[in-house]
Length: 188
Image (cartoon, rainbow, N blue to C red):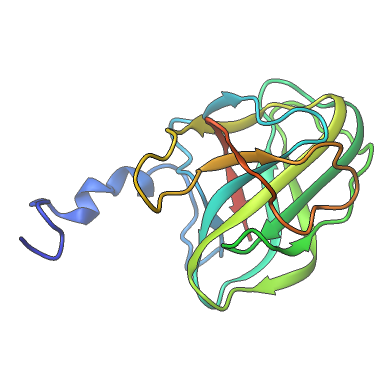
């Protein structure tokens, strides 16, 4: 058994498709993303006023100022609240964006939420980027589908929590429920 377990190939070759999926060089344009850009589709994330949070690996030293989500085929309609937030690995709120209230969100459009204060990551690990939208029609997002965790210690790739969320993100991610749809989030 080697450091790579039973894998006999070159990891760079095996993961090469990730480098061809259109992302900029992370050394040139700082960003962290939870999914590769290839193989994504139109997914429904959460009902109105419900928060959807996704696992996002961040590294010690990262400075996170913005969270970007991309709408898919369905635009938002009669939007009343739109917030994004960053949570630590234990599900405690680190920072949230200002409420974008009724700002339009067209189909196939990236929307960047600036956090009220940038967050410096002090320990590498899985954090949670969250989005809550209150609207008559919540926009669908670009994303993928994920399997429910089944191994001890595995967490949800996406989860929903809360209800009636408006302009203020909850202090914690309370009683998260597994969500098969995993939206793409880009942290900058």
